Structure formats: structure tokens, C-alpha cells
Image 1: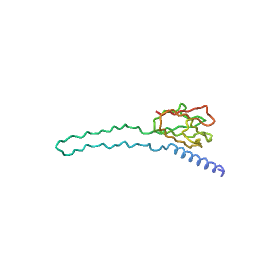
Image 2: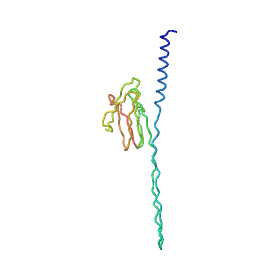
Image 3: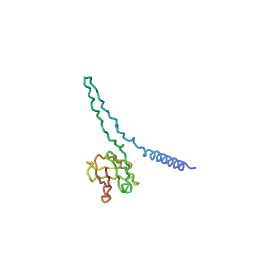
Image 4: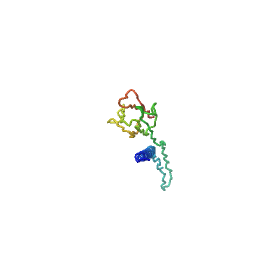
Length: 154
């Protein structure tokens, strides 16, 4: 075998190994945020007097809050996927990731002004936003203003 062919095989094998390694690193998800819902319960205290009057017991009501979720959204072929948008809960996070095959930069625009600046996404980079208010938020990619994408926060 020629030296040129050996170098070609080593080069292709190295590129393949790096690609597999990088692809495996993309699926790492952060641990979800878990809210501490423990509360202190007040206790009644009795004082010794001639007439013992029990004090009322105060019971606090705590509404359980679900664990905030991270919703992954892909930008590919000038589309925001899932195409139909997302319905999420307050406190959930949306993570947009540029997966364009051409490895071009995309610009994510919030029509509701949730960002002060345009969000530039180079290949495989992400933009995150945690939604804290009810409503419908609309996004599009710069240059594709006709393709709207909505997040409905309930």
C-alpha cells in the first residue's frame, strides 16, 4: 500500500472518531431544577394559667409546583422544529439549537422583545430563555419573517 493511501485511511478514521465523539457529547442534558418545597409547620404552645385555653393550630397550604422542564428546539433548513410551536408551563426553559447542515449562522428574532439584541446562533450553539409569564410568544429567523413560530406559556 502506498504511503498516500495509508495517510488517507488514518485521516478518515480520525475524522470519523472525532465525529462520533462530538455527536455523543450533544445529548448531555443538565440536571433539572428541583424546587425545595419543604415548609415549616407552626406548633401551638400552651402557657400554664388557671384557665388553659388551647391556641389555634395554623396550617399552611403549599401548592406543589412541577419541576421546570427544558424544551429542545432545533433550527434546521431555515425551519424551527417542531414546526407547530410548543406549549409549555411557566418556569420552563426553551433551548434553541442551530443544526443547519450548511453550518451557517442563523439569527433568532423575538417579536415580543424578550431579548434586547438579536440572538446569533452559530452552528451547534444554543440560545436559552426561561418563560416566567403567561402568554403567546412569537419568534422567527431573520430572513424568514413569514415563518412564525409560537411558544404558548400556560
